[in-house]
Image 1 (tube, rainbow, N blue to C red):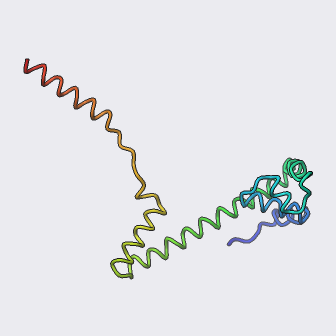
Image 2 (image 1 turned 180 degrees about the vertical axis):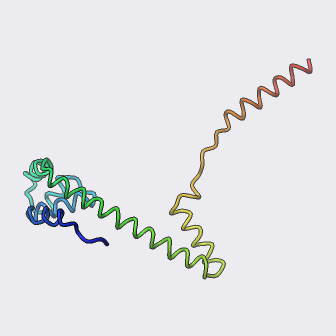
Image 3 (image 1 turned 180 degrees about the horizontal axis):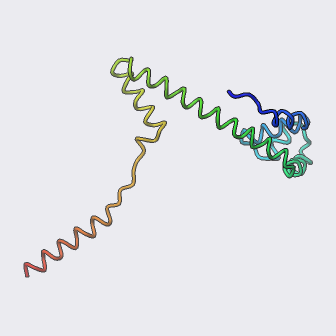
Length: 137
């Protein structure tokens, strides 16, 4: 993982521990009120406090940093998983290799159902049949 940029380090020092925890909880997917409560704000003031806090530009920058960092972690985990599946597919027995390939395809969406537009082909086919039938008469 990359080192924390100096600008972010300075921002981290400028916020309270509650604010930092709140931002981390929001980046993890909690709503603002839940994040504020879990960080230590009271139930009655959490939503308003977090809403005010998020109006601060520096707080918003920190939140984006936490969210982007989590995306990087997720991407790295996906890359590591795919790497392991590749090794299994290349070195495992037939059954293990097929399972690894199947899992990799599921991760990349390669085996997802695809939409096929048959309506335009059907219209063309029906037009040909009608034309053919009209010639017969």
